[in-house]
Length: 61
Image (cartoon, rainbow, N blue to C red; front, side, top):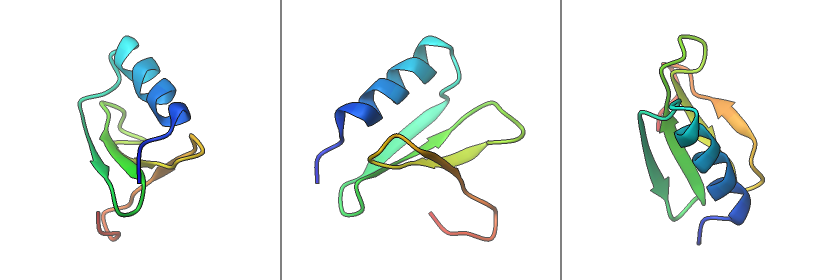
């Protein structure tokens, strides 16, 4: 599965605002996993529709 244009727009916005520390793409699921400097949203999943979902310590990447 290829990344969507919406995902690229969100990633570019996060990079421009210097809110993206690290990211990687899961081709099977179609999701980006991102790390941000935010204490509220340190690790999250960027879904194909552009939604950002937090990942708790108890959830696996």
